[in-house]
Image (cartoon, rainbow, N blue to C red):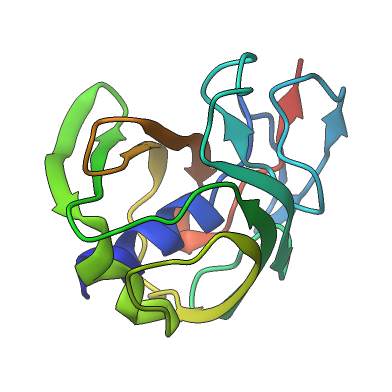
Length: 183
């Protein structure tokens, strides 16, 4: 799986905090209570911004919708995002990506944003103005159970902040997602 597909899938898989599940035999009942806060990304997604202060970010994310929400192992996850680019983003932009499984860091890397953005049919420079992205990602059936945390912190070539998103997801045995309670 390409890095950007992994990032998109990991971010798309997110639920926002700790998990709660109720097991009865082989069934998993999903329970979800969510209290909105200023870090929630607008739309139907469990994504969160990394920090409350985002006024200087180059991109304003207006909405992210995941389908299905919550994501399901073995299903096609469709991610739709809209926003506004305040300044042109040129070659040299990068993303600092960190993925953890529990407390174990699986990925800690810096990737070329302009190279990876081609996977969502965009090219650099990304011009100032409204932007819409739709991406379908095939999620594997065999997602190991556990808690995954992803953070993607994005900068332009001059190290000016573009955006930062974080996500946490917990999968039960067999790749089923466990319901969550976000507080």
